[in-house]
Length: 215
Image (cartoon, rainbow, N blue to C red; front, side):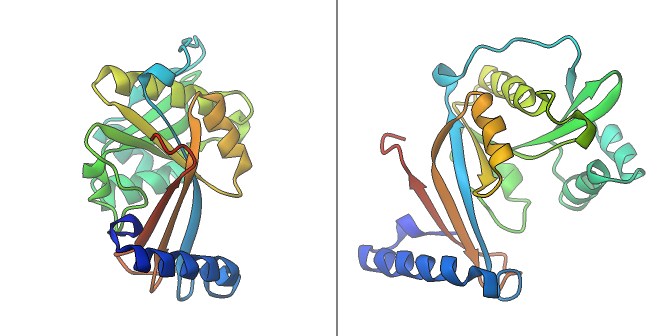
């Protein structure tokens, strides 16, 4: 992936100008010639994470290959994720939250290794960094705090395993997802913008802008 930060200063200026143009033109070209996305970036390290309080009504576990294959035989969003990420791309880092024995939420954990199996990277990760991605909660369980609980559970689990920083992203218009991430204890850091031309390209121009300059 070509990062804007790795380019000469003059090229960065031109790239930022082009980003502004593409943001204005997105509605005319997005999904046809250009894949343009503006995402809000959130993150935290161990010292910033809020205390974790286990819930007796939710059971979280890492999904096995057998679990994921079983999901492919079903229908719905969980089935679609299992087929795409596990069967097609070979990604095995899915975690499920169960309520009364029913799977009600899935989140996936990506390191740079998992991202290498994707068509392109949405986020450039360093060693000991992860992103919690592709989170989905059954509609009937939304509003019950399942999403932020899952983020907290995974964050504490990952920190205990040696991970130093956790990231999440949400579309700049997806305010519900952003609220859930903040409720879980992650801080808003800035934005990630990426562009693929054409929209099906495996390569992208990537720009990561922090509000907190100390990150």
